[in-house]
Image (cartoon, rainbow over all chains, first blue to last red; front, side, top):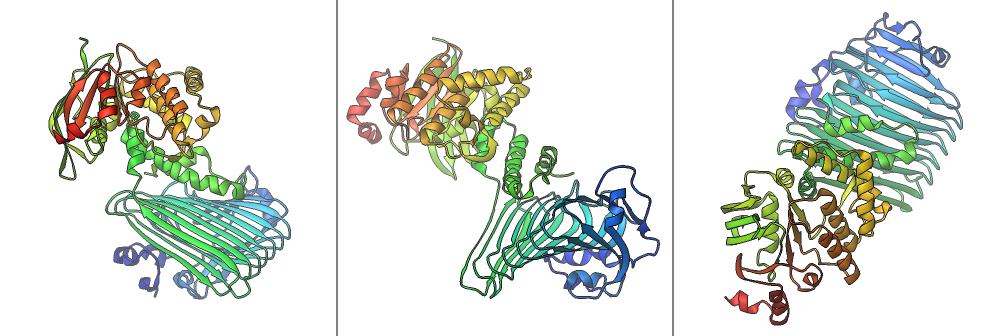
Length: 358
Length: 251
């Protein structure tokens, strides 16, 4: 029996015991969950639903589906302990652009993806979140080979239902990983991204969320510097409204072998109303003297001087707030763009994020 | 005398329960430039923020009329739509909002609030470039985030650009001369003088007479302890420059 109290994250009783019950009831793998007909058009596309998967024809040779028993190792796995889930292996080549599309998912889906990049390849993955009535348990293991590069965009077009998203990225020497996440949160959303860096690696992690009233998102970045001369950067921006619950745990871990590491972390949070709640936990664990590391965390309200200034030029209050929030998130995307290249959200997506999904 | 553009009637303003403006009366007729001078703490900036409707500046007595209509029931943006403009002493830096798109959004918001057609983009571009050129504002400054990294002079020229583009009925310039060198002061003053019009009034708030050499006022008022304690012509500013405010503060 799953014990909800073991699940970390925003630590209010309502969230812990009430909101994740649907996840605790996720079913075992069904033999009927299978690869369906090819999609009629498109390249690099995988479309996930509660009863199976469809993919564009070009992905057939790159994917392999098999069930797998999950054993409890951590809080994510506990939910699925001793249950069998679909496991999809994906092999990416020289320069693949892949879309993992969950936007048509309704109902429950537990899933594990194992993604492997070959040496010196350059690939991108766009993840589209599931619908508000979906419960998704998703573990993604990514192996980035020597000298390879991966860009990963996690994008929710609207508020999600329940989601546990656990991505473990293992980087071989001289590889790079860039991650940008834009989310509206959901009923219960917990996203964890862990990067393990060998020597001379780069990991650049960017995330923003705009939580309307009653929404939730708990975000955790962990970067382990396990080899020499690796660099990492974490940049997080959150906007939280009344009765929404936000969390960011960011950890930079530098092992004894991580000499000449450079690692930075920054989070900025805007609480829009009195009842907004954010849990921030910036952490550094450093076991090596020869490093450059820093972290900063700021929590405040929307800049009242800026709001007054815009309104004094005739811009109505709601529009002025939208302008300031758009600017807040635009700063994040501008910072991410040099690392994400073409894998960035559209201007319309940014406007949507600034205004907050209904 | 022309019709009054601004009437401040027995105004009382508090900040956090402390009375700053205390029974102030002032009339600025249409087409005139009036200056308010006064020592530190007299209430000059409080008056300007109270007129613009800034939250936290509580009007506890009296009224403010703009072109004959009370504006106390209007919020900040509605006062701007009614024709009020405040050039700030310290313009705010807003990263992520481009100067040009901010100006366009402001103009479109004012047009919408007034039930007017919004200006065509081509016409907007032509006008903003012409006004910017007159104020020696580069196209690079127009593309940059609003006031971010601008020098003191650039910020004040940018305020003058907004004044020119938004063309208000009543412009309040709060210590526009602070932080300006003499060349920048002349450029900003010329920008203001170009905007002088029988249908537009100015209230120029300053510590020093220097600004009034370039923006010559029709009337000068001395504000001390939250009240107008003396009024006169442009000569009054020169007298203040020589004698200081001590006599008025004592009064």
